[in-house]
Length: 372
Image 1 (tube, rainbow, N blue to C red):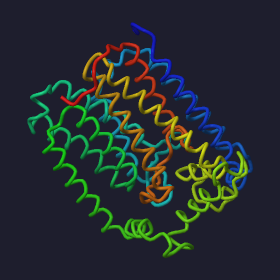
Image 2: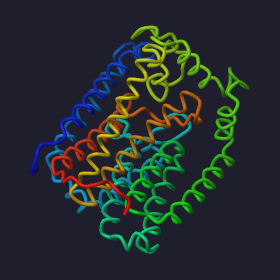
Image 3: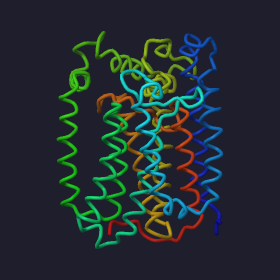
Image 4: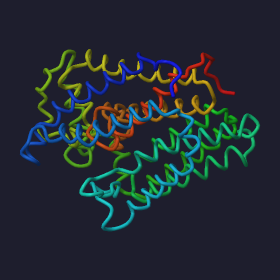
């Protein structure tokens, strides 16, 4: 049970992101919701019912349970999430969205297992590296090889979906834990080189990924074809100017901009709110990341520190990739904006992770954040 009060600044920032997300989703989702379901609030209702409600319950439970409980059960939790990824590959169980099989149908509801993997892999690696200790991290048998085995198992199943965007986030979150645990620089450099080579191979062996890369490098080449998405995003962001068109007054959300409720919601936000307010939105995310790092710095043990650092890395890189793809500094990967984009499973797991962070913060013991 909690020994102290949780970090109220962190709780306030989390609440602000949740509120912001529902406001932006309400504005962005109306036209496509009417076109698909005849109800302007369909996406908002589903986000509340299947994301916010179970997520709030998970948040409350995780904030009350001593975070060390998850270390004890980390292996089973991670194995269970991998099993869910296997189910995604089974015809009749999996649900298709676009070109990937990333969902499973449970009682008529679609669940995205990779969201659970993001959190359970972080918890598993944090527990493993804490047990390994300083010397274990430096030894390949206790540091690098277990990292490769756990991350590689998840990566293989994600590649088979295929879902390159989620693969990048899972790898980035896992690497953050490994880095924070004190991984030798030589191991990190080798991982970076191997990861870059694997990414290049995945791009070269899939024509649609190659096309996305070419569109990123030359978005002007095919504005009505493969470059349509990024060019419409540019148009939305550019139309917003300094002060925006006003909340609810986006033009691109009227079925011009693909995935306006998903990975393109940042472009709709920039169009409606303009550069100044959008910059404030990014400042809110930055304050959230900084507060999570503070929780990591003050965690009473290495498991808490590594878990918090991993969650920070997960949300930071997903936000970076989403925003970066919309402003043209990264290829489009289809990743949602945390707390904002539509996705019940994503929001539910994010709130569960926030509950764990709240519990860690309630047991804070001030100490410097460092690589050992």
